Amino acid sequence: MKLDHSALVAAAEAALKHAYAPYSKLKVGAAVRTDSGAVYAGCNVENASFGLTNCAERTAIFSAVTAEGSGVRINAVAIATDPAIPASPCGACRQVMSEFGGPHCAVIYRGLDGLVEATLKELLPDAFSSPI
Image (cartoon, rainbow, N blue to C red; front, side, top):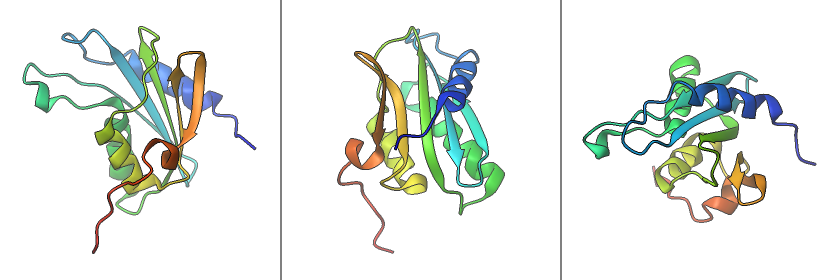
């Protein structure tokens, strides 16, 4: 049974209004829900030195870690874009989601035919994990 993620999607849509995207013109907002039930949002922040840009998904996750500590667990991530185009999370974001969410974390994003919900395991089947 799929959960209702409409509030999480709405939080991601609200966050994208704060995005700083003067180079790509693609504003992205993300919201994560932790096991505590709290929701944390983030937006993309670009930089003229593109390697210093941070994605919305990682911004939201880092906000959750800041608020709840290093043991935070994320059970869902929603992503919104302006313009509204198909946009699944990048590989770096998928790996960070894996670090704090695990394989069953729900990821909601816009696909070709509307919103898609997938598990992180479906999006990143062989996630890197630390041997420590």
